[in-house]
Amino acid sequence: MRRALAVQTAKKLRPAIDPIGRFPQLLMAAEGIFAAERKAKAEALPNATAEAAAASPSVDVQ
Amino acid sequence: MDYDDEARKLFASLGLDTSGAGKCNIYNPMDAIYRDAGGGTLYVGNNTAAQNAADLKRHGVTHVVNCTDNLPLYHEGTFRYLRFNISFFPMYPNLAAFLDTLFEFVDEALALGGSVLVHCLAGAHRAGTTGCLLLMRFMKMNRCAARHQHALTGPALTGARAVRLSSRAQSSRRADGEEAPSRH
Image 1 (spheres, rainbow over the protein chains, first blue to last red):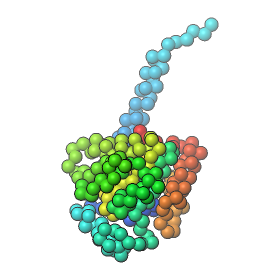
Image 2 (cartoon, chains in turn yellow, purple):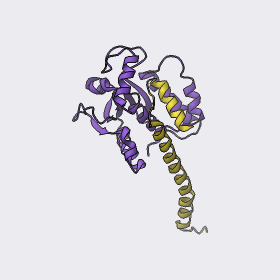
Image 3 (tube, chains in turn orange, brown):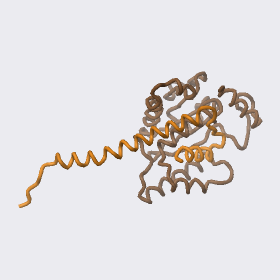
Image 4 (cartoon, each protein chain N blue to C red):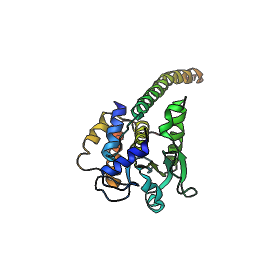
């Protein structure tokens, strides 16, 4: 969907744009790379938050 | 696939000469496809646009991505260049690293507030696909963006109008609490 939307958006702004030949395969592969990056970031975020909480010094409220 | 040959077929279908020169009301040497929050603009264009240094400067272009293996880097010393041989992508074992060379180059340009021309011979297949890759990376393609883009009907949108509309879509996404176009 993201790949299709990017092509659709680009074509509206420059109608000549036309990924032909093996380029659709490239866009599909790139979409997979971006999805993996997003997943890695999403997985890293809760871990980083938990680590930061564990590392922060406790504060005694008097 | 011979992309130069495909470009010449496109030129012929538009009534342009083999270099893409000539007038056609549905095809421009270059078009804006993305406006960064920092003010830079991403253009996709053809060989004619790449040769016209004065016009590129007028559009604030500081960086040029040449998506061919045979067209010259016309104005080295005036603009920063990246040769991005997109048609060779199957030869790269690490596609992510190959794409990163493109993204880092464009990141640098946009971080400096500069604009980028991505070009090949026709600005349709190689540069067009590169433009799509950049849109996929820089714009968070979502339903809201799609709604705005669906409003872009009628004749081809180019130059300032395209940029205004793209910026409006970004502003709207921010107003909706969605993430602004990001540079990683």
